[in-house]
Amino acid sequence: MKIIVDAMGGDNAPFEIVKGSLRASRELGLDIVLTGREEEIGACLKQLGCDGLPGHVSVVNATEVIDMEDEPSLAYRRKPDSSMTVGLNLLKNGEGDALVSAGSTGALLSGATLVVKRIRGVRRAALAPLLPTKTGQVMVIDVGANVECATEHLVQFALLGSGYMKGVMNVESPRVGLLNNGTEETKGTPLQVETYPLLKELDAQGKIRFIGNVEAKDVMRGVCDVVVCDGYSGNILLKSIEGAAGFIMGLLKEIMTSSAKNKAAALLLRKDLYGLKDRMSASKVGGTALLGISKPVIKAHGSSDAEAFFNAVRQASVVAGSGMIEAVTAQLKNTEEA
Image (cartoon, rainbow, N blue to C red; front, side, top):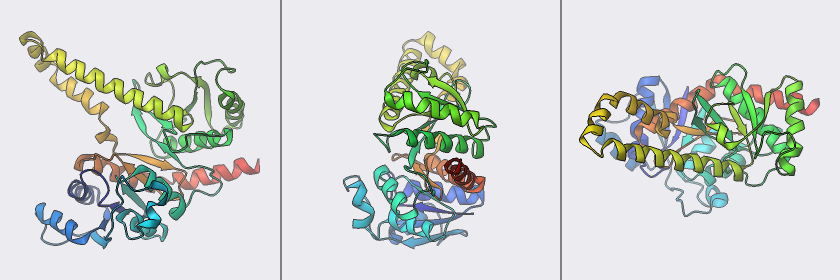
């Protein structure tokens, strides 16, 4: 399997990106195509002790870099020789099975939509991160790609999210919930009220397993496997969870180091505390899938280090080999024909 990597995207590019990609090639047996400035990538390889290109790793030179200051919707056109745009064109032309980038989210979403194209029938691509819960993981779809949504978008998000959790995460019958301010069927804005019966109908047809409305306070309890929402609500949910998690972890650290007694207790709990830290770490997940794109595109966190990027590449390989996109494409076709 061949994974295309935007080597110049992200805060720690290109060194951490190259380092994580080399590890993925070595440990996962993947072919890696690095797109970016050849000289800078070569310098990183030397720093990592490589005398020339390792086996199963190649470089496609790209002279430009999309910065965070670039207008996302125009960046891929204004910088046609950027590492991201070159990578997207390689994916479009079938010269790789998936693409991973830690670059600008907006530029990647726009580029993937207009270069690689959406799955036939999909109205909007969505950002769909996986978050840890009490019982495992939950996908929140969408978290910012589509601030305003129509009912048809949320219906498709439910199908996309359910397909990903089943095909990639091996959840046999993913539970789908609609984010709302109450569990009653009549709760919410017109968007939620109108979407509810449509998701209920998909459940009756056996296309998803819809459990009804889900409140934000219950998401982390693991009451469902997929949370469907518009990008505005999803982004607020995501950032609230991130902020609360950071606050709690910081408070816990402060308590554990506040006295000799607490430090001794922390030593006894060290293994469990590190396990909690790993569970809350974005590095272990690796990246966020851009669902709705016709080929696998993974958005790694902008601050990804080598470990996080290794996991993002691994995630891309799992998505590419899962057949999820093909399955969702067929399901959407059947839904339209019904």
